[in-house]
Length: 166
Image 1: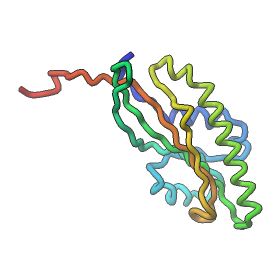
Image 2 (image 1 turned 90 degrees about the vertical axis):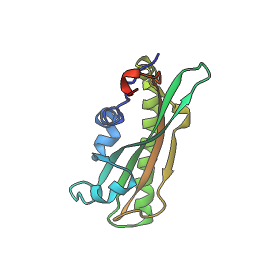
Image 3 (image 1 turned 90 degrees about the horizontal axis):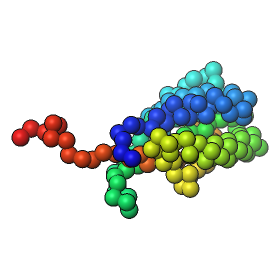
Image 4 (image 1 turned 180 degrees about the vertical axis):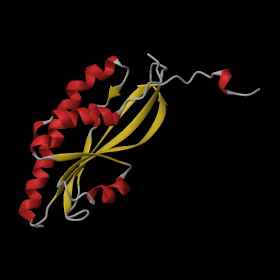
């Protein structure tokens, strides 16, 4: 299957955000950021203590699969950040535990969605979902984790003469 339809990570994770009870119970605010550089601006929002931030920038590569088809691999990051106003290690450990629970829940959700995504030509690489905890206090009394995952999308690399001058 060859398509140039692009996986909409923000829509996918917005849907996940809406449906998850822990996310809603802990009142994680949904945000869109462009890389880690976007986190300080997002954290200036003093109305929210917890953030589910979808990084809408994507690193990627194009590769040829064993069957000869071409794919575009796109890498995405989700930041799970929780404010710790008292800065105690017990509070930090509790917040990290919540983030770890969310990572497990997010991973199980992504695995459950694999077949649905595959029907549209998108391969979610659920066997390679990496997560990382922020060491100590990251920004403005915040701790948390981030999750990195990737999708492979078939792409049409057939030369289109209409796109080139002679």
